[in-house]
Length: 243
Image 1 (cartoon, rainbow, N blue to C red):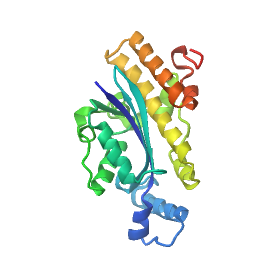
Image 2: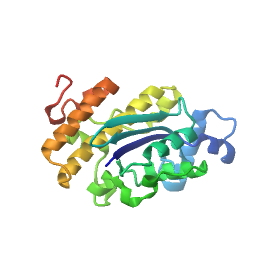
Image 3: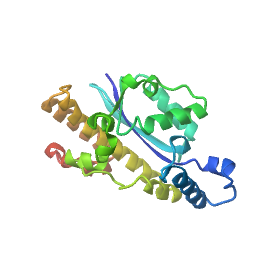
Image 4: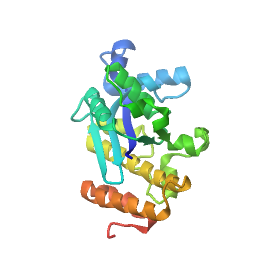
């Protein structure tokens, strides 16, 4: 069984704003400002509708009994279409797709952007049975009644999210800080996995000793993949970088 823990980072679809919202000729930051103001007028929120996002980073952790690996695709070195194509190819054999708020955001955005590029989606992206949205599951569908991933992951031993708001992703993108965006996206994937480990205990899928083994495997992998992520794992079950 292979679980895939997923997160994406997005910005508003600037190209649509240029072509279809009479914003051509404006600087990117002015297009963003105009688009978010229009979204606010239309829906009462500056957050773009699902079809108005462009994906700039996709990160996912593949976990099985035999292996663990992190994959990140960035707009820095791939087009959005190529990122999505690579994602679907690597996801096709997954048993389960795990996310935080994925059913309300990540999965619909991936579906919409993939459809625009006429891509074939991996089965888990289209299958409700293969999707586990931890935010939806833990709140029994009352997603407005539960706090965010950063708070819950802190309660479970992590240091929480690197950024307190997804809106700051735009600032990083504007400054071409693609490595920082990738770091943030991967940290959300790790936090989601930590929540999932506790959820697996809740549902009796694993026991505490199995969780310790899985966490140790994660720490050993992260130590070789990107040691900068280790700080967020230091408090988890008493593990730290010296274990």
